[in-house]
Image (cartoon, rainbow, N blue to C red; front, side, top):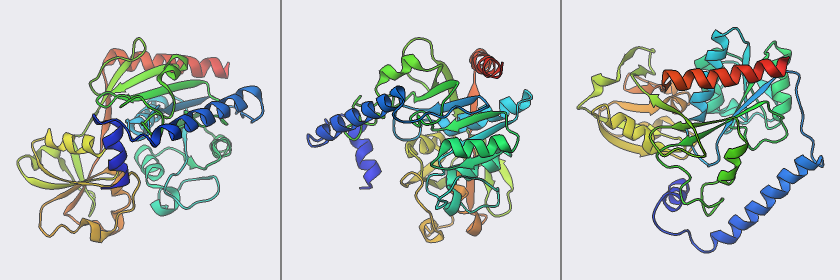
Length: 333
């Protein structure tokens, strides 16, 4: 069993975590508390930039939908006259220094998720372990709002607005800290953020939370870029490839479109070669957008990327954008 799948079975299953994980979780909690105190007390430096910073993150390990939300927010801000830029770690890439991404870059260098955001939004994206430095690159290039993807725990970068995304289906799992559970921080952290967004159906957390869901309507061929409605695969057997934090969400999405799904789960950000997509038949291979950026070089008409779009109700969309733009304007003022 893959390591990620083993942990997920513990974190989100019915069985109690192995006893040897509990001391490690206590140690993780103590070190995290010490780290937060170091920033609050000034032992470690928090850098405030000259432009407002919006952080989108989560309390749990794995995919909750934060990256699609970052892209949606960036595009919404751009439509309202702002010049947003996105900063992210560039996980899975080999680049050692902070840098801005070129859409022609290789995912092995800059990371699959970062490259996806650059290509999908057509907005500036910078990567780096040093997020303040990466964000400054974007500011020097003319960006007047910074969106930090998966940046909730990156305390070196001061922020003006925090959004936490929660997986409505999985919630906080068994409620334990890493590695006994999926939590990076305890749920009490939600009382300190500016907005809570629940992705999909689920119970509300800590008062009023905004609702979104991810919607897939089309598939795009890797060999040539032709698009077709996702419903044209209905009733057919398809291979589904997902190297994301929660592969089952992708598989369920395809099943809801009427497909007979043969699932192929990969670890989050795992590299994918052409040999790993040879399944011995002519059935279509559908994959997440994040995986597709790693397969573009050898993509054929049999391989399809399935982009997802963030969908809010009108009231929740208006409320989130109102809170966000007001915080940005207050910061600039």
